[in-house]
Image (tube, rainbow, N blue to C red):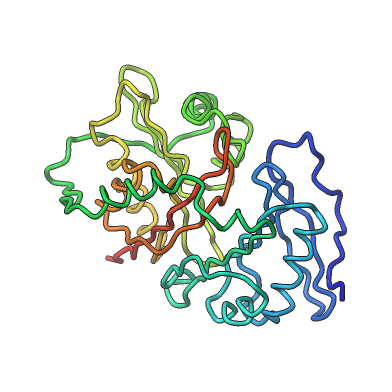
Length: 301
């Protein structure tokens, strides 16, 4: 039985970034906005109402993915919906504690329309990275860290940030190499922090806010190759967490490529905890990437 009514133009094959389609759950009379993401060959649903029918939601998302020819579904939902969605074939890939306003947990669920999409894309490299992360690492110590001064980016920095992100990530799930996109993010209130050295931006990162949940995803992390290995990124991320603390946000999370030890270790040293893994979740570069889920509690003053 069809529960779906796609009421906006479908994503065209020549689009390189996600476009939102409105999908109506006719059985419960609730309208949700989901992303039909051709770029990463997936359908993504973030934070539907916690009182939606979990079975209807799961069936609807799978049907949408099949209708659109997508290979995977990703859903970030209130953990209370997880059991019903698992009944429809979804797999629980992770749980982020206190995601919603520091109280309710978020379940990260996946469904493979193509079965291989639920298998690791880079299993050998991911297992090797896991071994690195299992070693004891000292926590980030602000008092002992080099004194890197970061600043909040302004609109005039959009072009240089976009250039740095474009150089770092040849292909990316969001249009971060587009200065207009970066400017829109900054103008909308997304905290972007940068470190300048020698008159140029040496490193940047942002906190993509989820205001209704009072949490944020730390993302857009990039450091120029000539400036790596000096702790610039950890300094920026630490300062972004202080920004979130000042805003009253009780948690933060990130999604990091599972096969790259360095970026995962950076968050681990900042106190983030590993919460799960999304196999072949999104396209970065020439293929699909397995993404680790990390989150932390931000201590309030």
